[in-house]
Length: 92
Image: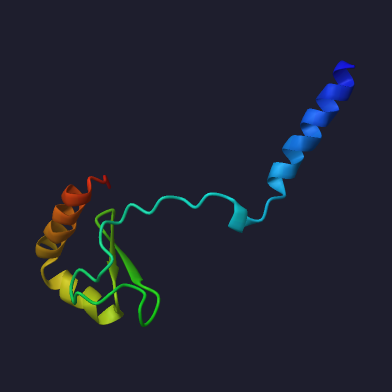
């Protein structure tokens, strides 16, 4: 009887691995802005956002040109991200 129950349990667990990705809960996105930190344009509206890592921090832009503007004064834009994060109460 124990082997039968173990077999049923294992078969049930095997079904979890076969679930399509769409049925699994998505990871929570903790990025606090829905707009480009440089231009203010909505992220992903015209093209997928450009993701740049600055000193271990993720920054999202509407386009590659905004990355260059960010690099000219990163402290200004990182402060904007930090301020947005404080308003929504997220970490990272």
